[in-house]
Image 1 (cartoon, rainbow over the protein chains, first blue to last red):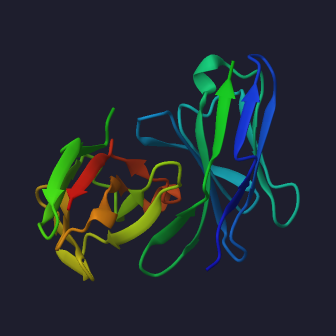
Image 2 (cartoon, chains in turn purple, orange; image 1 turned 30 degrees about the vertical axis):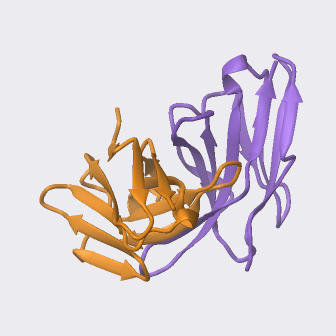
Length: 115
Length: 113
C-alpha cells in the first residue's frame, strides 16, 4: 500500500535554529498538507499546497513557516527561528480528490523538540 | 474557535460492546466528515468517511451516523475489540478550502478484555 514517508522521525533543535522537515507524498497525489499535533492535543491544520502554491493556511502558519516542493517528489516544511512552543509532532499528508471526497493519507510524523 | 466538538474525551468499553463517539460541527460549509484512528506514536489513519447527502455509512464494524439538521455525526464501533483501543478523531472538511480538515479533540478508547 502506498504511503507518505517523512524524515527525520525525530529532531532536537535549539531555540532560534532553522529546521526543515521533509516528506515524500504518495505519487500521483495532487494535494499536500502539513498538520501538527502538540503532545496530547488534537491534530491542527497548518497549510495545504496544490499546483505548486499554497491553497489554504491556518493562523498557526505565520511568517516563520514556509513550504516548498523543490522537485517532483519531495514536499518540505521549513521553520525559521524555532520557538519552544513549536515542539510538536508534524504530520505530512497527501490526497487525491475523488468524486466521493478527499481521502487524506498521513505520514508517521516528525517529532520536533525545541530546547 | 472550535469548529468541531467531540465527546466523550475518553471511553472504556468491554470487549464485544458498542463504542459510540459523538461530534458536532459549526461550519455549514463542511461537506466531508472523516473519522481517523491513531495509535500512540503513529500518524492518523482514515477509518471511514461520509458526505452530508447520506445519513449513514457502514464499513464492517464501523458505522457513521449523520444528522445534517442537527449538525452532528457519530461513530459506532460494533463488537469492540481490544485492538480497537486507540484515539479516535472526527473531522470536518470543506471542498472549497482544499479539504483542509478541522479535527475534534479526540476520544481515547480503551476496550477491556
